[in-house]
Length: 231
Length: 405
Image (cartoon, rainbow over all chains, first blue to last red; front, side):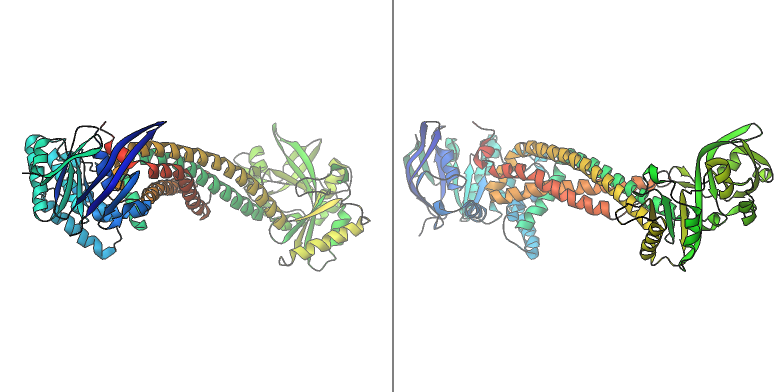
């Protein structure tokens, strides 16, 4: 089986003046389709940086990153954007729904950046409604984010991440802004999606969330400290 | 995809009404003033041309005026060269229907029974009424005997009649009014002609040319000769013929300039057009400055909007928007609001002009609408370019992590 994500000796440096900070050092690992991977580590260990490199929003300083067989390093801004649009779905800690858009409009946003004719529009709208239904918001298509609870917002965000049927869902502290009940619900939803074959990589520093994954990668000081299946 | 961004730009503009309104205001005001200015300019021009026609200076009249030079300016030294004989001689041309020489005496007070009024006295021949489109409302017109006998008779313009005989103009007929040291019998009253701009066409008293030459000017030269043509179509050719003819009569050698000028209504219309073009050019310059200010406002408000919406930009980038997608969206937001603002301004301007159409001379033409669309697009593109570029440059990770350390 070919990996969806494959990293080989990935490094990331930040320069500020003459001081170079090595955030990631020689990271090598692969993620295979259907995996649920949690990346954990103390603050400042570089896990968010890693996630945004995986998300094609940042470029590594060196090393090779292949996403679904495509070497990301060679791509232009347009190419990276297309990759984000078609192969990746993002879920953020603070939900990051657009406050002026309804739940449905938020879920449809990724389709704006995809080629599609008039015929597509209707199908996309139906699909968006199906997904919202599936995450349990069938009654709230036209609610604005401000009218939804934190858990509900994160469900909309997950629905949005699913909209373009991505290869991988990348979640950055998806439960970080939620109470434990809502947090459990979101984790359950992510596991359910994984159960249906969806590949998910999530960053968290909540051990309870980490334990729910099938594989746990721990990062310390920019290096992989451990990489093991969860019991 | 490009189309999607444009649609999104329209939707997002509507979702940030405060920014949109702020940015639009300047454009609305500039285009509003432009519309009213252009409409008033066009309207004034139309009114002047219209008035000229009423004045009797229609397409079939040439005016030979004493003194060379431009249409309304002349060289004062040469004003005594035009003679009644020049007018008589012009009659020999088959294309000339009538000629009307006249002497313009400066504004003079006229008196009747303790009332007095300062008005323009003109010494004219009987042909004047026909050539200048005046009609006699009451009494009789001047005739050849009045001319030949140097009679002290006069025709009153409507305004003068109202001033001296308020409420009962008919009572004026046969009465004697005093002009300077002389008494003139009122022979008739002219029908009303109205205003030519601020110039009251009815503020005049006509006396026989011969009488004016003897009593007032004390010379026989005339100030102008109106020449009515049989056929207006070839007015340009006739104009040249008349000019050559009078030069010959005045014994002017080729190196001497004209001591008279031949003006057609075409010349006057052109003159009015040119001066209104100059005015329009000036106003357009003012408008461009005000649009520039609006553009700067748009740029600044949009920069604020971009930084306010950094998170939104970050999200869109994460969901697959390229830098170009973001740039296009913001650029079109600027274009939309500038265009919509322009159209709102032009409509408000047109509506204002429409409601004031009885108070001010104004014409609603297509021109301000086309200009509004043009300037709207221009201001949108120019003022939106930099903020749109900045929007494209927003670092998505920083924007997304904005709330976190």
